[in-house]
Length: 383
Image (tube, rainbow, N blue to C red; front, side):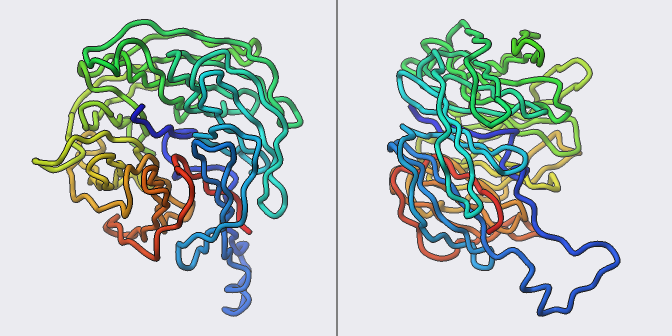
């Protein structure tokens, strides 16, 4: 399967629970004290296809990573998310007998397994926490379904409360023989749940009954045949969303009507320049100010940078930057917007880039960080 598996609400730019310390209004620390009080490191968690989550520390001054250990007993933790207060991490176990695992976060950023629940589906691939923090919603790639689990007061997961099975297929042999739910995205207002389905070229729309833990299907939007919608991200201010299409190497810009939960496809643009090799986009992010969109390209082994134009309804490809490894299945930006990290699955490395605040340009920094089959990176709390 060609796929990186995304993350909580679209885009990693708003990972919750990762605050940067600030000086209170009306106070002024001396420069030396302010420098000492500023956060210097973040905990980092790397998901992969091994039976462990790899742990690291991110130096916020340089953007570089240092390994700090691993947490075993979590089989194929291919996608990770954190809760709002940074005390829990949830992982999909991307295996045929799929499971979802809950972990607690210690004061030092370490993880402890709390337990897991069966997904009752094949190859869970992505997950998101519903607003309020009481439900976890999971996309199952292999089975083409979406599941709901209650989050208990202690952070553990209760038994599954719903499983929505999709139907249909697409025109691409070997990839679209049936539905393949690839991501769960909560809309910015928290009212709806969107699920891109690579197998049927569809974005499904649901609402969640928080009393019963059941999903209601409200509709679905078809994208171009054979496009393979994988991940999507919302513009932070304008009524648009951007879909990374894995199978035809494009981004589809869609208008979004929040009152009707309606998605209308518009511009379609390639993620690679003309003459590029066969390519499969994976992750898509948008800058916090909504000016730039980034897409990781597997095959071209690059990160595409787009300018957001016309109030959000159009993208323009600015450049592609080599990812510094092979098969960048995932990219993530630190909460302060200064650093991007690419998880290069086939070269077993994570590479770091400085993000220019004005131009959005990416500049590689440091040496690749070696780690087994990285496919997802979660920036954790300040250390």
